[in-house]
Image 1 (cartoon, rainbow, N blue to C red):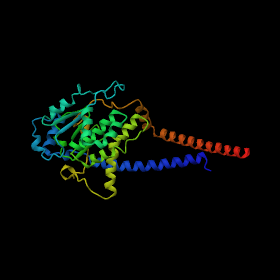
Image 2: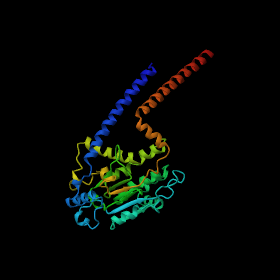
Image 3: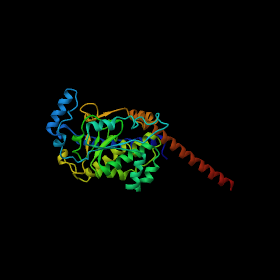
Image 4: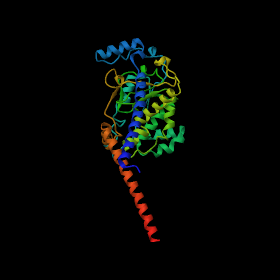
Length: 344
């Protein structure tokens, strides 16, 4: 019979080994993401000169720069997708924080990208799109507990179907996006790990977006906390997990599908938009405070992220409690058996 202390030691060892394996895989994946980052070397020299000059003087690159002649090998269509579901959270955080009526994101994107097709999806057009093109997904789409999950799902399907650039309404264009269209797909770097899903781009029919659309059903699980449920089922962690699966599949099978730089990239490749292009320096995009899907539970989750030892302690305590409860049930069961035997 194992004592509780032995059980705790075995559990602790298991958690440690599992954690080390997860950390090893994550480290390998993060190293790969760094290798896939978009850099100035991926842009034509004339544009890099203009970009550096504008940053040096605190200005935007001139709109009269000949973007079309400079960027002739666009893989991503000149389409920008936004999504706005009215009253996204009528009882949460005071309702939707960035309604389309006041967001300047579409206006600014038109200003810097006048020849782009800008689409703003809503709950009606989103569901009609699924009913027409992907009716098999409607049970999952309608069954999502949180509205933001439906928005996330729509992001992946729309980009897979039409291609283009997807942007949350708290993100706006700060310059022409033509330099970013030469890549088959890209996702913005997240801090500290993985990628974000509030902004990404892809060519229509990109295999990774297809994998994302096909993986949503399997990831539709309840993680108790709203934040965790959204994060893992459709949110940034879902995107990061699919990219990691993609990377590990090709790594484990000794396959090479990427190629270096946009000119050598295969249609299956994806790239990472580093924070230097995604934050406030050299950036193509501006940001407003977002996170409208964050509930009160996010504070608890983030506290455990900052204090992983506490999570291990909670797991150990729960394991000890489960062990004690099981032994008590076994003891009660034996006592009942003895009582019945004595009664006979």
